[in-house]
Length: 170
Image (tube, rainbow, N blue to C red):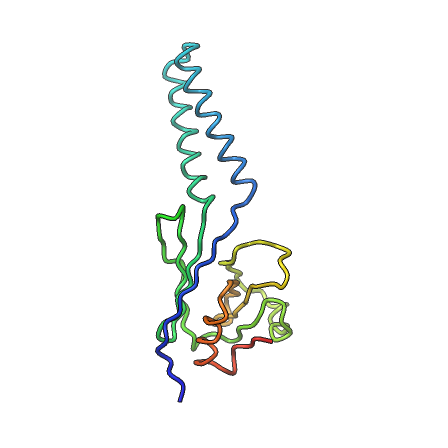
């Protein structure tokens, strides 16, 4: 008899886009430039407003530069949390294992029948292309969503214990 009340947790750090990093540094430099120009060159209130605007842009971009995803499996439910800047946690998805149609490594032949279907794709992985072997898994949820994530072997085993005919490890 297999117990389905296990609890497994997995944390994956996602790489920030190079564009976001460049834009955040650029906005920080522009904020400093406008602050100094408002003081030294007499731009006054216009320089301070631009300094505050670019400072706000830097703040929001830097929050999205460090993203981690935490996957939790408990009581036949997969929960995904997004952690911004190692501080702010936001629940971004809850998935009932009973509604998963198929779960397999992302390049598995078990997912071939879903390749040509128009599904909403959600990526909760580290977004590092070209890693060998590919650590990502994909699951098709309720015929509407394609979820990409990077679970640990223990996580996959826990889900497979509950849904052995829908979870493949190739």
